[in-house]
Length: 109
Image 1: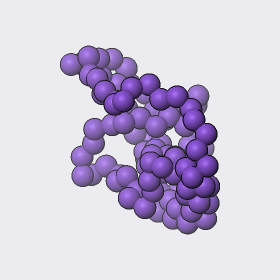
Image 2: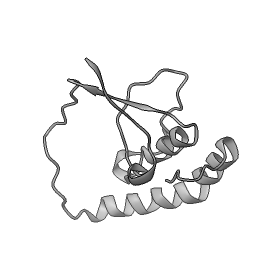
Image 3: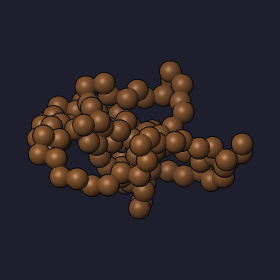
Protein backbone atom coordinates (compact mmCIF):
# COMPACT_ATOMS: atom_id res chain seq x y z
CA UNK A 1 0.00 0.00 0.00
CA UNK A 2 1.18 3.51 -0.71
CA UNK A 3 -0.18 7.05 -0.67
CA UNK A 4 -2.06 7.75 -3.90
CA UNK A 5 -3.02 11.36 -3.15
CA UNK A 6 -3.01 13.88 -0.31
CA UNK A 7 -6.18 15.93 0.04
CA UNK A 8 -7.99 18.35 2.31
CA UNK A 9 -11.65 18.67 3.28
CA UNK A 10 -11.92 22.08 1.59
CA UNK A 11 -13.05 23.63 -1.66
CA UNK A 12 -15.22 21.30 -3.69
CA UNK A 13 -14.59 18.59 -1.04
CA UNK A 14 -15.84 20.68 1.90
CA UNK A 15 -18.72 18.25 2.52
CA UNK A 16 -16.62 15.13 2.04
CA UNK A 17 -17.21 12.44 4.70
CA UNK A 18 -14.17 10.21 4.42
CA UNK A 19 -13.78 7.08 6.46
CA UNK A 20 -10.32 7.36 7.90
CA UNK A 21 -7.91 5.53 10.15
CA UNK A 22 -6.77 7.67 13.04
CA UNK A 23 -5.30 7.48 16.51
CA UNK A 24 -6.54 8.48 19.96
CA UNK A 25 -4.91 11.88 19.35
CA UNK A 26 -7.30 12.63 16.48
CA UNK A 27 -10.72 14.23 17.08
CA UNK A 28 -13.29 11.65 18.08
CA UNK A 29 -16.53 10.80 16.31
CA UNK A 30 -19.40 12.43 18.23
CA UNK A 31 -21.28 9.53 19.85
CA UNK A 32 -24.35 11.73 20.36
CA UNK A 33 -25.05 11.40 16.63
CA UNK A 34 -26.33 8.39 14.71
CA UNK A 35 -26.10 7.10 11.18
CA UNK A 36 -29.89 7.12 10.95
CA UNK A 37 -29.88 10.89 11.48
CA UNK A 38 -27.48 11.46 8.57
CA UNK A 39 -24.54 13.91 8.62
CA UNK A 40 -23.07 11.98 11.55
CA UNK A 41 -19.45 12.38 10.36
CA UNK A 42 -19.79 16.03 9.36
CA UNK A 43 -18.96 17.45 12.81
CA UNK A 44 -15.75 15.42 12.99
CA UNK A 45 -14.93 16.49 9.43
CA UNK A 46 -15.37 20.13 10.42
CA UNK A 47 -12.85 19.73 13.25
CA UNK A 48 -10.37 18.02 10.94
CA UNK A 49 -10.74 20.88 8.45
CA UNK A 50 -10.27 23.60 11.08
CA UNK A 51 -7.18 21.75 12.35
CA UNK A 52 -5.85 21.65 8.75
CA UNK A 53 -5.61 17.85 8.53
CA UNK A 54 -4.18 16.21 5.43
CA UNK A 55 -5.94 13.06 4.24
CA UNK A 56 -3.62 10.45 2.81
CA UNK A 57 -5.64 8.50 0.26
CA UNK A 58 -4.18 5.04 -0.01
CA UNK A 59 -3.66 3.09 -3.20
CA UNK A 60 -4.78 -0.55 -3.04
CA UNK A 61 -6.79 -0.08 0.17
CA UNK A 62 -10.44 -1.13 0.07
CA UNK A 63 -13.47 -0.80 2.30
CA UNK A 64 -16.37 -3.05 1.42
CA UNK A 65 -19.90 -1.93 2.22
CA UNK A 66 -22.52 -4.57 2.69
CA UNK A 67 -25.16 -5.02 1.24
CA UNK A 68 -23.71 -3.05 -1.67
CA UNK A 69 -24.66 0.07 -3.54
CA UNK A 70 -27.28 2.12 -1.73
CA UNK A 71 -30.37 3.27 -3.58
CA UNK A 72 -32.48 6.14 -2.28
CA UNK A 73 -35.79 5.12 -0.75
CA UNK A 74 -38.11 7.55 0.96
CA UNK A 75 -38.24 6.77 4.66
CA UNK A 76 -40.46 9.03 6.79
CA UNK A 77 -39.09 7.66 10.07
CA UNK A 78 -35.49 8.32 9.06
CA UNK A 79 -36.41 11.77 7.74
CA UNK A 80 -37.86 12.62 11.18
CA UNK A 81 -34.69 11.40 12.92
CA UNK A 82 -32.55 13.36 10.46
CA UNK A 83 -34.55 16.53 11.12
CA UNK A 84 -34.11 16.21 14.89
CA UNK A 85 -30.41 15.42 14.54
CA UNK A 86 -29.81 18.35 12.20
CA UNK A 87 -31.52 20.69 14.67
CA UNK A 88 -29.35 19.29 17.49
CA UNK A 89 -26.21 19.79 15.39
CA UNK A 90 -27.09 23.42 14.63
CA UNK A 91 -28.29 24.39 18.10
CA UNK A 92 -25.89 22.46 20.34
CA UNK A 93 -22.89 20.99 18.53
CA UNK A 94 -22.00 23.87 16.18
CA UNK A 95 -21.69 26.41 19.05
CA UNK A 96 -19.56 23.87 20.99
CA UNK A 97 -17.25 23.29 18.01
CA UNK A 98 -16.82 27.00 17.33
CA UNK A 99 -15.96 27.61 20.98
CA UNK A 100 -13.50 24.69 21.18
CA UNK A 101 -11.88 24.88 17.73
CA UNK A 102 -12.76 28.27 16.28
CA UNK A 103 -13.77 29.04 12.73
CA UNK A 104 -11.65 28.72 9.60
CA UNK A 105 -12.56 30.13 6.21
CA UNK A 106 -13.41 27.29 3.84
CA UNK A 107 -14.52 24.81 6.51
CA UNK A 108 -18.19 23.91 6.78
CA UNK A 109 -20.55 21.42 8.31
